[in-house]
Structures are given as C-alpha cells and as structure tokens.
Length: 341
Image (cartoon, rainbow, N blue to C red; front, side, top):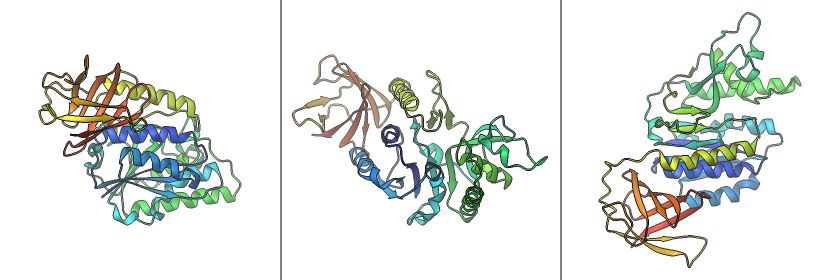
C-alpha cells in the first residue's frame, strides 16, 4: 500500500490550494485502491476537506491535530510516523499544498528506493540563504554540497527514516527551548541539515519526475509540479496554479489512443449543483459528440479525454470499467459527473 499526505493548518485559504491539488490528483494521478491520501489538518478544516474528498471520490483519510503555532504546523509533516495506521503503508509520499499532479503517480511509486529520503535538488548547504541549513553547520564542517527543497518527500516505511524524523524533531525542540530564532523557511533547514549530515538523501532520482516553478509550454511529462513562493503567500500561489492547470488541458493529447471502448455509448452528464442541468453525451469515432452540436473530444490516454462542450473545455476522467466519470471544467475548475446509461 502507498500513502500520500499533505498538511494544512491556520490559513483556511490554503484549502483552495488543496482543492486544486486533489482535483489534479483525481484527473491525472491514476491511483487505485492501493493508494490512500491522508490530510493532516486543523480540526476546524475537517468538514470542508472531507467534502472535497467526497466530491472527487478519492480514497482518503483525515487526521486532525490541535496545534498552537505556525511553526508547529510546518513541522507537523515530521510526525507522520505517529499516525495510527502508518504501518499499513510501504511507500510514503509527502506533498506541499502548492503542488499539482500532472502525470501518473505510478511513475513515482514504481521507483526502486532505498532507506533514504528522496527529494528534489535545490540550493546549497553554504547558502546564500539559510533555507538549506547553513546556520547549523559548525565552522569548517559545512560540506558545501547541493541541497534540496522539502516540497516533495518520498520514502519507504522503515526504521531508518523514522529515526531520522525523530532526530529532526529533537533538533527543532532543542532550538525552541533555547529561544533561538525560527528560520524564515521554517522546518526545511532542519530537515536538510540533518538529512545531509547523516547522508540519508538522494536529490537526483526525482529530477525527471518533479519540477520546481515550471514555465508555461515547458511540460515534458513531469509527474509533480511545484509552485513555490514566500511562505504563506496564498494569492500568488493560487493564481499561478490555476493558470498552469488551465494550461494542462492542452498539453498531453495523443491521436493514436484507441477509445473505441467509450464510442457509441450514452452517458448522462450532470451538474451536481443543479438538478435540472443534465444532457446526453455520445462520443463518436470521428471525435465529435453526436448529441451536442459543435462539440468535440480528444484523448490523452485510455481513460482521460478533453471535450469542448458549450464553449467550455472539460477534462473527463473515467473509472476503470468506464461506467462513470468525473469532469473538471477549465473556466472555474468546477466538478461534474457522468454515468453510463
């Protein structure tokens, strides 16, 4: 079993980031029942997050924790081994909320990994910022090596990583007890310093699968796209994520995909927020939609298509037996549904 988890506390606006992340997960992630998504969150966010999971029909769990400070919220991800069901999972993937899934997550989970933390290369241990633990090295002991961002953490469930996380937490607690200044990048310097000091990291293996600050028109099949900005800068994050997700409606189509398994079948397409808004969709072999004038469709893979419908574009993701789909609309990222008649 695989576990994906993200954390969200204090800033309720971040639920909008999480909403986009989970929608991209549902459309592009291609995860089955062997992968569960866990959200660690403030108890007062639990209902809204559950509604997102329910609307997307994602295999999910919520673990709510009462925290008192923003810094504590940041390092809550290090408490994952305290999760009651953690021993059910073999591989674990942590994702920041300012992320979009842009390809099949099996690309990540099928990687052969050792007892290390797999991360994305970024920065250096000797600065120029304190983001990568430069303040923690003793004089003349800094290895001056390439470091990493903590936006994505991939690891197997083993005692080596569990002990590493415990040591990082102990470092944080000692730092707080000494009334030392909290770094501007919160817990990342602690993670980077301890992981590199103990030589328990690989910051190369994810380079073909994870991209930091992607440019438009630059998608080449990456699985995870991260949109960093200043910690807590919600508006800059949500705007760029919306723009990039809209861009993803157009980048992955394959004319050679055989979609005969959906052609000439009738689907009832409906808006869950409007009981009268229903229409019949019938996908033809010539990439038109017989039942709707001036509409068309094209395929990304055997379970994902994009359609133009009523002057809007929608990504349609079918379930495994093609009896049901969810659809994501480009203009506002609303969710719609379809059921085979």
